[in-house]
Image (cartoon, rainbow, N blue to C red; front, side):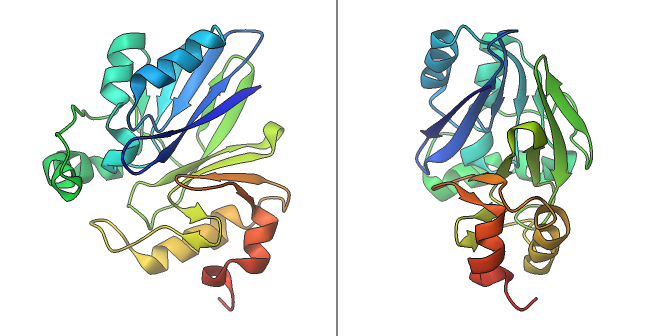
Length: 210
Protein backbone atom coordinates (compact mmCIF):
# COMPACT_ATOMS: atom_id res chain seq x y z
CA UNK A 1 0.00 0.00 0.00
CA UNK A 2 1.09 3.52 -0.80
CA UNK A 3 0.67 5.89 2.15
CA UNK A 4 1.80 9.48 1.92
CA UNK A 5 1.08 12.10 4.58
CA UNK A 6 0.99 15.76 3.59
CA UNK A 7 0.76 18.53 6.15
CA UNK A 8 -1.66 20.92 4.54
CA UNK A 9 -3.05 24.36 5.25
CA UNK A 10 -2.49 26.98 7.91
CA UNK A 11 -2.87 24.49 10.78
CA UNK A 12 -0.75 21.77 9.11
CA UNK A 13 -3.48 19.11 9.02
CA UNK A 14 -2.20 15.62 8.27
CA UNK A 15 -3.80 14.65 4.95
CA UNK A 16 -3.32 10.95 4.15
CA UNK A 17 -3.24 9.57 0.64
CA UNK A 18 -3.80 5.81 0.58
CA UNK A 19 -3.27 4.00 -2.68
CA UNK A 20 -3.14 0.47 -4.03
CA UNK A 21 -0.23 -0.14 -6.38
CA UNK A 22 -2.01 -2.89 -8.32
CA UNK A 23 -5.40 -1.30 -8.95
CA UNK A 24 -4.22 2.32 -9.02
CA UNK A 25 -7.16 3.31 -6.81
CA UNK A 26 -6.80 5.75 -3.94
CA UNK A 27 -8.65 7.41 -1.10
CA UNK A 28 -7.76 10.80 0.34
CA UNK A 29 -8.40 11.50 4.00
CA UNK A 30 -8.81 15.08 5.28
CA UNK A 31 -7.83 17.21 2.24
CA UNK A 32 -7.98 20.45 4.20
CA UNK A 33 -5.99 22.53 1.70
CA UNK A 34 -3.12 22.43 -0.81
CA UNK A 35 -5.09 20.45 -3.37
CA UNK A 36 -2.47 20.93 -6.07
CA UNK A 37 0.12 19.22 -3.84
CA UNK A 38 -2.31 16.35 -3.27
CA UNK A 39 -2.91 16.02 -7.02
CA UNK A 40 0.85 16.02 -7.62
CA UNK A 41 1.33 13.07 -5.25
CA UNK A 42 -1.55 11.20 -6.86
CA UNK A 43 -0.08 11.79 -10.32
CA UNK A 44 3.39 10.68 -9.21
CA UNK A 45 1.96 7.33 -8.13
CA UNK A 46 -0.51 7.09 -11.07
CA UNK A 47 -3.43 6.94 -8.62
CA UNK A 48 -7.10 7.69 -9.25
CA UNK A 49 -9.12 9.01 -6.31
CA UNK A 50 -12.22 6.92 -5.62
CA UNK A 51 -13.18 8.26 -2.17
CA UNK A 52 -12.65 11.40 -0.10
CA UNK A 53 -13.00 10.71 3.63
CA UNK A 54 -13.33 13.49 6.20
CA UNK A 55 -12.68 12.61 9.86
CA UNK A 56 -14.61 15.67 11.08
CA UNK A 57 -15.91 18.94 9.71
CA UNK A 58 -13.48 21.46 11.12
CA UNK A 59 -12.27 23.81 8.42
CA UNK A 60 -8.66 22.62 8.47
CA UNK A 61 -9.78 19.07 7.58
CA UNK A 62 -12.61 19.69 5.11
CA UNK A 63 -11.84 22.98 3.33
CA UNK A 64 -10.39 21.44 0.16
CA UNK A 65 -12.78 18.52 -0.18
CA UNK A 66 -15.20 20.10 -2.65
CA UNK A 67 -12.36 21.31 -4.87
CA UNK A 68 -10.85 17.83 -4.88
CA UNK A 69 -14.26 16.35 -5.69
CA UNK A 70 -14.71 18.71 -8.65
CA UNK A 71 -11.30 17.77 -10.03
CA UNK A 72 -11.58 14.00 -9.50
CA UNK A 73 -15.29 13.18 -9.36
CA UNK A 74 -14.76 11.23 -6.13
CA UNK A 75 -17.57 11.27 -3.53
CA UNK A 76 -17.11 12.88 -0.12
CA UNK A 77 -17.90 10.92 3.03
CA UNK A 78 -18.24 12.26 6.58
CA UNK A 79 -20.59 11.81 9.52
CA UNK A 80 -23.76 13.86 9.16
CA UNK A 81 -23.68 14.79 12.87
CA UNK A 82 -21.07 17.36 11.82
CA UNK A 83 -23.47 19.16 9.46
CA UNK A 84 -23.94 21.97 12.03
CA UNK A 85 -20.22 22.67 11.73
CA UNK A 86 -20.48 22.76 7.95
CA UNK A 87 -23.32 25.27 8.22
CA UNK A 88 -21.10 27.57 10.30
CA UNK A 89 -18.11 27.44 7.95
CA UNK A 90 -18.16 31.25 7.77
CA UNK A 91 -17.64 31.37 11.53
CA UNK A 92 -14.87 28.79 11.32
CA UNK A 93 -13.14 30.81 8.60
CA UNK A 94 -13.37 33.84 10.87
CA UNK A 95 -11.50 32.00 13.61
CA UNK A 96 -8.49 31.71 11.30
CA UNK A 97 -9.08 34.89 9.26
CA UNK A 98 -9.09 32.94 6.00
CA UNK A 99 -11.53 32.88 3.04
CA UNK A 100 -14.72 30.85 3.43
CA UNK A 101 -14.28 27.57 1.53
CA UNK A 102 -16.95 25.86 -0.55
CA UNK A 103 -18.50 23.05 1.49
CA UNK A 104 -21.52 20.78 1.08
CA UNK A 105 -23.34 17.91 2.81
CA UNK A 106 -21.64 14.54 2.40
CA UNK A 107 -22.44 12.25 -0.49
CA UNK A 108 -22.90 9.62 2.19
CA UNK A 109 -22.75 9.72 5.99
CA UNK A 110 -20.18 7.58 7.77
CA UNK A 111 -21.37 5.39 10.64
CA UNK A 112 -19.69 3.23 13.25
CA UNK A 113 -18.56 -0.13 11.91
CA UNK A 114 -18.98 0.86 8.28
CA UNK A 115 -16.53 -0.63 5.80
CA UNK A 116 -14.63 1.85 3.64
CA UNK A 117 -12.91 0.15 0.73
CA UNK A 118 -11.20 0.64 -2.58
CA UNK A 119 -9.67 -2.12 -4.63
CA UNK A 120 -6.87 -3.54 -2.48
CA UNK A 121 -7.52 -1.51 0.69
CA UNK A 122 -10.19 -2.09 3.34
CA UNK A 123 -10.86 -0.04 6.46
CA UNK A 124 -13.47 0.29 9.19
CA UNK A 125 -15.04 3.50 10.45
CA UNK A 126 -14.93 4.04 14.21
CA UNK A 127 -17.32 6.76 15.39
CA UNK A 128 -15.47 8.62 18.15
CA UNK A 129 -17.53 11.62 19.26
CA UNK A 130 -15.96 14.14 21.60
CA UNK A 131 -13.78 16.45 19.53
CA UNK A 132 -16.91 16.95 17.42
CA UNK A 133 -20.19 15.05 17.48
CA UNK A 134 -19.43 13.39 14.16
CA UNK A 135 -15.72 12.65 14.61
CA UNK A 136 -14.59 9.35 13.14
CA UNK A 137 -11.35 7.41 12.87
CA UNK A 138 -10.40 5.04 10.04
CA UNK A 139 -8.90 1.71 11.11
CA UNK A 140 -7.04 -0.38 8.53
CA UNK A 141 -6.32 -3.67 10.32
CA UNK A 142 -4.33 -5.28 7.50
CA UNK A 143 -1.94 -2.32 7.56
CA UNK A 144 -1.97 -2.06 11.38
CA UNK A 145 -2.91 1.59 10.91
CA UNK A 146 -5.31 4.05 12.52
CA UNK A 147 -6.05 7.44 10.99
CA UNK A 148 -7.27 9.15 14.14
CA UNK A 149 -8.30 12.62 13.00
CA UNK A 150 -8.29 14.95 16.01
CA UNK A 151 -9.49 12.30 18.46
CA UNK A 152 -6.07 11.07 19.64
CA UNK A 153 -2.64 12.71 19.39
CA UNK A 154 0.86 11.75 20.45
CA UNK A 155 0.72 12.52 24.16
CA UNK A 156 -2.58 14.34 23.98
CA UNK A 157 -6.22 14.23 22.86
CA UNK A 158 -8.44 16.48 20.77
CA UNK A 159 -9.64 19.80 22.15
CA UNK A 160 -13.26 19.94 23.30
CA UNK A 161 -13.83 23.68 23.74
CA UNK A 162 -15.22 24.28 20.24
CA UNK A 163 -18.86 23.77 19.16
CA UNK A 164 -19.83 20.10 19.36
CA UNK A 165 -17.00 19.24 21.75
CA UNK A 166 -17.52 17.10 24.84
CA UNK A 167 -14.57 16.13 27.05
CA UNK A 168 -16.26 13.16 28.74
CA UNK A 169 -17.47 11.80 25.41
CA UNK A 170 -13.97 12.12 23.94
CA UNK A 171 -12.28 10.12 26.67
CA UNK A 172 -15.07 7.52 26.58
CA UNK A 173 -14.66 7.22 22.79
CA UNK A 174 -10.92 6.67 23.07
CA UNK A 175 -11.28 4.01 25.76
CA UNK A 176 -14.16 2.22 24.04
CA UNK A 177 -13.04 2.36 20.40
CA UNK A 178 -9.28 2.94 20.24
CA UNK A 179 -7.70 1.35 23.31
CA UNK A 180 -8.96 -2.15 22.34
CA UNK A 181 -6.82 -2.01 19.19
CA UNK A 182 -3.47 -3.85 19.21
CA UNK A 183 -0.62 -2.04 20.97
CA UNK A 184 1.42 -2.08 17.76
CA UNK A 185 -1.24 -0.12 15.82
CA UNK A 186 0.37 2.93 14.22
CA UNK A 187 -1.64 6.08 14.92
CA UNK A 188 -1.59 8.95 12.43
CA UNK A 189 -3.25 11.87 14.22
CA UNK A 190 -4.82 14.89 12.58
CA UNK A 191 -1.79 17.02 13.43
CA UNK A 192 1.77 16.30 14.51
CA UNK A 193 3.78 13.11 14.55
CA UNK A 194 2.76 9.48 14.58
CA UNK A 195 2.48 7.33 17.68
CA UNK A 196 1.16 3.88 18.61
CA UNK A 197 -1.81 2.66 20.61
CA UNK A 198 0.50 0.90 23.05
CA UNK A 199 2.58 4.01 23.71
CA UNK A 200 -0.49 6.15 24.29
CA UNK A 201 -2.05 3.51 26.54
CA UNK A 202 0.99 3.65 28.81
CA UNK A 203 2.07 7.28 28.54
CA UNK A 204 -0.76 9.60 27.46
CA UNK A 205 -1.58 11.66 30.58
CA UNK A 206 -5.20 12.11 29.47
CA UNK A 207 -5.78 8.35 29.48
CA UNK A 208 -4.43 7.47 32.91
CA UNK A 209 -6.45 6.63 36.03
CA UNK A 210 -9.77 6.57 34.17
